[in-house]
Image 1 (cartoon, helix red, strand yellow):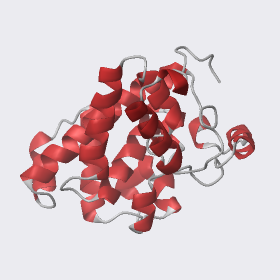
Image 2 (spheres, rainbow, N blue to C red):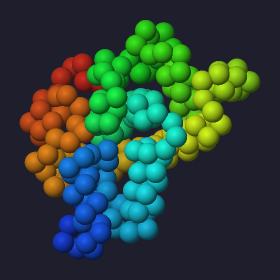
Image 3 (cartoon, rainbow, N blue to C red):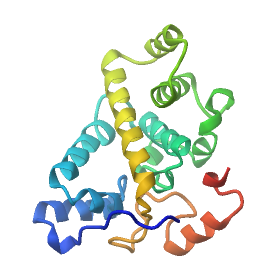
Image 4 (cartoon, rainbow, N blue to C red):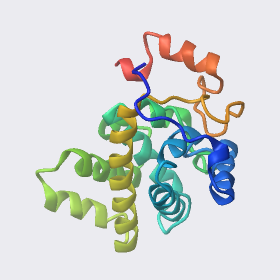
Length: 208
């Protein structure tokens, strides 16, 4: 684990509204409190992310489960362990299975995803890494999504890609801030002890 690069802002130094959001992060997750405690150094950055995340991830016009698959795809492809070890409770309640997260980097050949989910993941891949066949990509996307859905999903993926590429550099991890909850943690990461054991395994996803 790299050394933490930017400190957490202590909860008692935040105003009441920010403290409420931090407790929501601990209680509900996605995001967990550690990344928010770093953004709290700049309240404008804290709220810009929190408000956008609420509006286009937790709410919005595109189905949440598709967005969570795209979120974890980006985590896996940029190797942001902090984000990749979280799961959306809302997406789980909508029927996403853990095995669907396991095959994200091979989504095109996997039988775990339907055509709509594969199209969304192709969108995430293209935003992150580019796409030569743009006509084919847009034709595929328009077969499954409306233009408002494509705008929301594209903005969400772009926000996710930028944030996770940055968070990967911070050297932060779970169960370090407002510890004691397991909200939104993936199986095998729900306590500090489980997290350490899972990361030590040879088949840990970030080692592949």
